[in-house]
Length: 205
Image 1 (cartoon, rainbow, N blue to C red):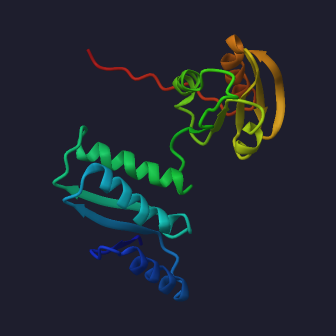
Image 2: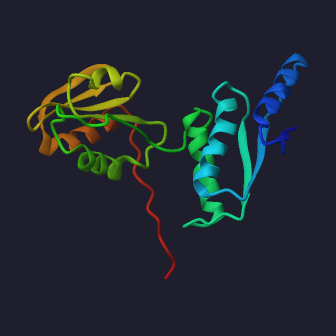
Image 3: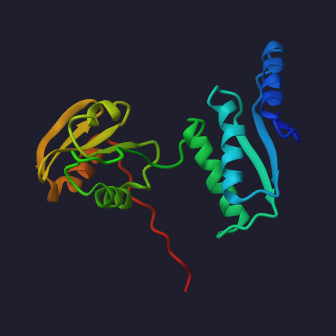
């Protein structure tokens, strides 16, 4: 049995939370899907409201999935693509379901020792198919290790043209030439058994 917990209340998050406490008190442990409907909102408003409504519950362990619909909204992409992207993003952020690679990156400052955006894009292009892997990309050694403490792997600027790689909090490659550092990062992921080859998509002729 799966319960669908729906509300039309504009501020329905508290209402849904109350139901979860009632389920707990009654020792009912079946999966619960949270359902909301967002009408006459912009894409940004829908993203904000759905993230707040679902995320606030799921971050506390309430709910096993999301179900929401939209209407009268102008998307650059289809409604379905927007809903899927938003839903999986909420599930990922609340650790309910990990479906894509997660990246941690510093905001960049005067201490940054490489082009953060360029390197991040390069790493993402080669690793974004890895599920349940968290990679930190940090511009310098000053704040990097602290900010990336819960990452699986770290790529940290340690000097001009030099990169230090981490596995968790432990340094495993020190002062690598930046030209080979991304390849070494991939090798580190493979060496720890967390690499899978990207799926090849073929189209019928």
